[in-house]
Length: 289
Length: 289
View 1: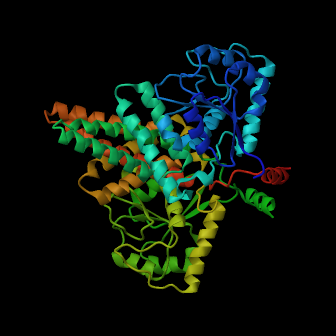
View 2: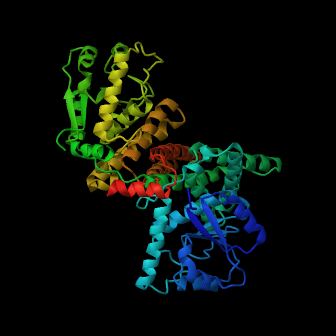
View 3: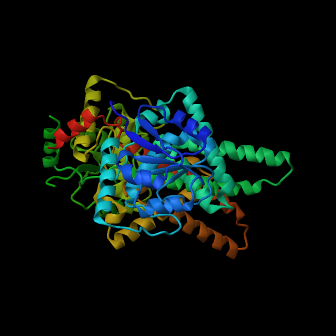
């Protein structure tokens, strides 16, 4: 491939995080463009948004007014927000969240961010903010971005074309272990927040499901991740002399994950055409000869 | 469509069952061919197997020797077996089972039978029977059938092309209600047999998952079917003064269904090609202009 598929505006502030993200996005597929600190992100992104396909943000690094400004200027880009999963929306409702200790999943999160962005059409800002402007220039702008992304990433209609190079089965042994460890951390966050913080649980669930989908992870592997974690909890509670029969309730978490994942797969099957007539078959043959 | 997509050898014996099946396969898509009673099915099918795409059987209607004969003569066709779901294999291990009180799902079961047949390659007989012959003529015969089915039903590689006309959302209100009632009966069979008869449960599970997949049923509808049934059990047990907390264990059933369905969807997504290069995009454009 002669040029990177995705050019990403890197708006991270913490130096260690910048370096870690660069490490996980070092493939030829990504070009990370750093932003000068001190400059106003709204002004900079407004004038150069055509250069970017996605944006990398850090939870809590900007004041809410910055995001408000971006929304008001109609600067919408697919976004991954790195930081604790709290359930809060920073920039817009198609953003994808990923904790800093799970960066192994960053390439999958970027795919998911682009996919959500394209599927949902025009995102809505967080905090119930309405879009300030809706001029035809801005709509055109978003349309151009969507088309460019579709073109580069091989979207077929609204159906996302996953990158087989990132499939679990294509990874090296150590990459597989990294990804499983990372997914296990995400699933643990999900279990811990499931009954006490639904908004945070929802972001963890989406993060897990996105990675499982874009990595084409076998379903049994998801079940194993669940079972290993529950097994660990069970042993720990037993050691500490606590009751552990409530752990059965956590099957609901796996059900929720499975239902989401299943629906995601279901919607990703290209639309079925009606059963072919002989004429269709002829046309298909002619197409391929 | 000028000719039916599937020609089905009707080997049912019970008159009422024959009529009921004819009713559920009355669309132009199916041609049901009745077999003369008294004639030997092995002799008849051996000489005319090229005329058929699938076969309709009745649980327990033939002696095991008949199926043994079909296998020995290398007569293998996609099969739906109507009758109680017992877990027993009648004809070969790619056959699909459907109880007589759930015939609303028959068109979906036929799709599933064809799909399983094509995916599994050469089926193996029940009772661990090995294939008697493996001459090149027989292999060629099966190959011809597979190609004919792929051609008629629009298979793409091993990926089944579902018929959108049978999708749940395409059905009329009364058809929707029929299908949901039928699926609910299948799910009930599954719940009842899940912990005490794994082989029967497995056939009920496959039957449910097949219909859900070929009807493109929303995942939430599967969850609702489960919840409604468990709710009914719960009320009944409470009325009768029994304990009902063990019902939580039945979440395992839903997990099992979801995992199967999810894996089926996952494997049905056409293989992803690597992310397109500019040259690929050009080629694609040229293909379509």
